[in-house]
Image (cartoon, rainbow, N blue to C red; front, side, top):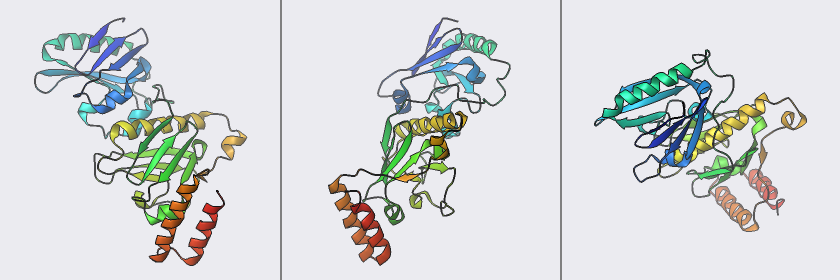
Length: 292
């Protein structure tokens, strides 16, 4: 196509096989758009294209991705608000004819499998390393493993008993993201060989971090979830090898001495409160001291 279409929050640059969406910066722009920066969407990743009236004298050009084509939208699972949909370009109402023209052009570029689920991710997720602060811990992803480091001010006793967590992507089957904009939002890692006890509320699950007011906002936690999901799908598609076959969740290591001292102190508080037995306290204390 070789054309450019500028909207209120983004600019779409059309190429022969894809559209580059550049998200504009500004105080009124959704923070998710600013975090994404730009995204290249192959036409083969699209399912359909629509034009519809917007609010307050606007019109929207909306491209809908195929199921499974975009890890960001797969992780979002329909939870994004309309104004935060990265596939929606908002234009002044007087440009409706132009929006319809480009919609027709995009429809003509859709492949024969447009209505079918994609067999792989066709749109790239944000590149790691990525991290964000949840209510009960800090989540980080380096491209090969996810780490949860608990905050003593927010983590439940169950998570403190389990200790900081590290999950190799080869041991995961997916990611479950519940938006921080709704009650009890969380990010949960789905393990291939999860313990039978791995269930229930996210605040008790060592494979999940929970959100709260001001913690784990959409523009930080959703790109994180998308990047992890993309790595998990790539690991599934890779040939079986020794590293993947032996991938298991492991406890975090290499903590600073001051951090270990704080954690032992907190374990003592849990012990005094009757939340840890003598045996549990001794075992966990020995485990932490062994990391010095």
